[in-house]
Length: 255
Picture 1: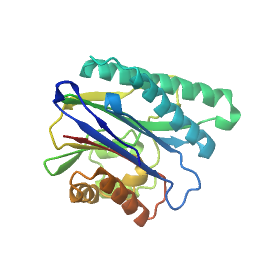
Picture 2: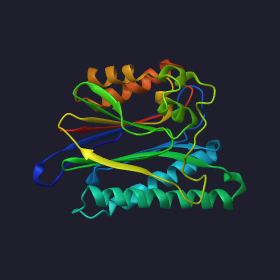
Picture 3: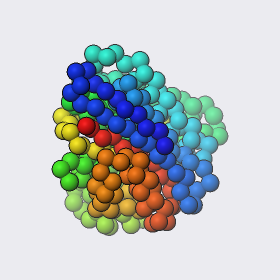
Picture 4: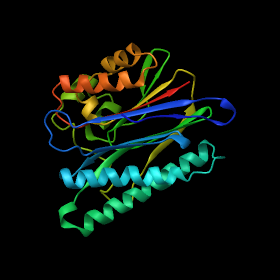
């Protein structure tokens, strides 16, 4: 379970980051990937699709492309520059996944979701494509800050179905946006100020399909500043719910 501490200039904020992944109880392969780049305060989670070979490759391309871009990131970046860099490298990952998928019949139709956060100084930049999620826990409240790019997500956005109905909907796995599906992709990127005590959760749908938001909040608050404990319990909850998919979580604590 990787963990890093990332400081920021002037000691304004410090972020601790932990990631954890589990194959679940019903899959033979783990198509999820995750990466931390401590010096940039970066955390990325990707959920691959298209068969175990294609899914693994697609998610790996996504995290490697973003991770490498932020390993060389200038130290004087601000939130706008970080947002631009995240957008650029996610779009580059999309092009490479699309190219590989069309060049190799064994990888045809491979793709991946992606969620990423960059926490530096007093801000966080978030980016997402697909139905993996980013949550923020602040002052005892959990809020989803990403938007699900899925058919069911569109229904939820229009308040046509409830969260409970969405979780059991027969078409919940139909994604409307992902890396590798088209030559180009739209990336949702935004930023906001952070507060000491904020916890950002990045996760694949192997967690959220089986664990409710209230259960997620309870697991996060239960463990205080123990990110490893949070990650372990979230994965345990998903497996207790059936473990029907790979489960990956990234947790970023602002101190």
